[in-house]
Image 1 (tube, rainbow, N blue to C red):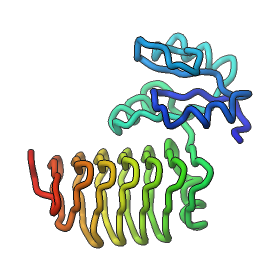
Image 2: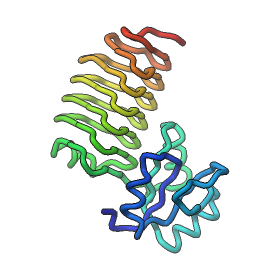
Image 3: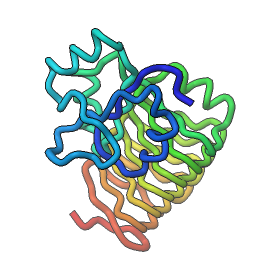
Image 4: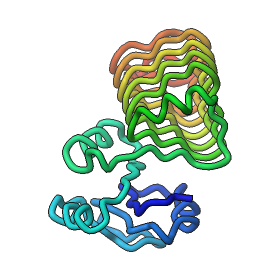
Length: 207
């Protein structure tokens, strides 16, 4: 259970249950989307004046659930700053030493049913979606997004702002550059360059 007042930034249906479970401290959804989110009340609308009112009254924790890593970083740096906190959901396994290291970071979001093994270095702003597995000695750069049920094997390096698609498999020892995109279901057996887009089994550049 969340002990402090909080807002969710962005729209992600995976968080409905979490919001309901913590409704006593939930202040609302902050989003630049025009449509209302079906179970939330709106708050903020991404306008800095609205956010300053919320901050003054509640000083809430902010959880940014947007998938785009660069947008998460921009919102953290320009608007929400120190209010951005880590959110680690229940029913997930994280090595105890990795968990300790996470306490020194911010803006990390780890959803349910994930497995994170030993000596995994997760940097600020990383989002790890439902059911993903990350094995030993993996380095994940800032504001990486890992989609549901991705499998990342040992000794992998992932550059900042990279997006790993749903059900992708990253084989052991692979290095993935910055700002790359790994397609859903891709099986990556070779290194991926900065800014590349790869898909398929085995994954090949489709940029």
